Image 1 (cartoon, one colour):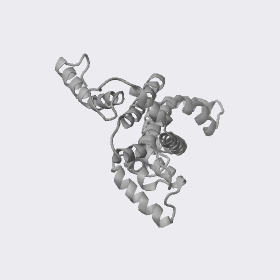
Image 2 (tube, one colour):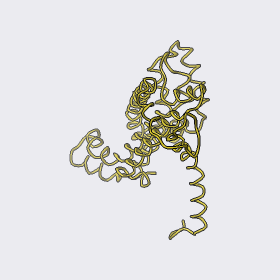
Image 3 (cartoon, helix red, strand yellow):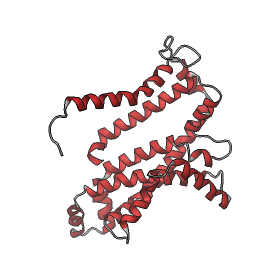
Image 4 (cartoon, one colour):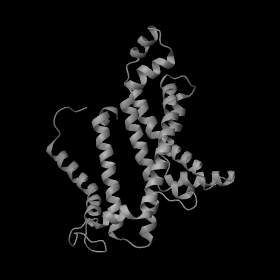
Length: 262
């Protein structure tokens, strides 16, 4: 592994790639402040009325509330399932631990559309299509790998002698886990929680197949609005999503240090 400063050429290439990737974000942000009633870049005048329109639109507000409810419920459930699973997998208490770990992480490999169609057929056979609980469980399948990935990384960097010391001093395995291990990997769990929350909130291919009647998440609402015509309000709500995601990621980096975990 090479140490020291990066070559100037590599820095330039990396900067150009980053600029290329960020260009669509810049276009959306500029379109969201355009004074015209249609998308145009560069903007013809500057206004914030599209943001006010989005925050006063009952359809968008209902979609935001439903998305938050779905994302928080699925993320909390994913964390509760992932913590004991990762602890058992880390200690190799289960046979074929590596195979089980790969199976849990497999939703990261399969296209989301494939998972959505498969889950749709499954819930249809069970007669539970359009059920909110099934939608939450579907999101748990999607977001659990993010929590598992960061939790396993945290456990791999945790000093096992600390847990052993707690056991020697009389703590049970459960109390040692709760008082020593969990605080030691809280940064990893926080990072996994935020990644899972963002992923669930932004999920479309799986959600669109399993939505309850009369309900829609914010990303699905945006896609539906695009079918009716593109206007700056869509760019405005997209910009709000980008800003909220950026704030969450910066908070995680400040509080947990994602680069040290991953």
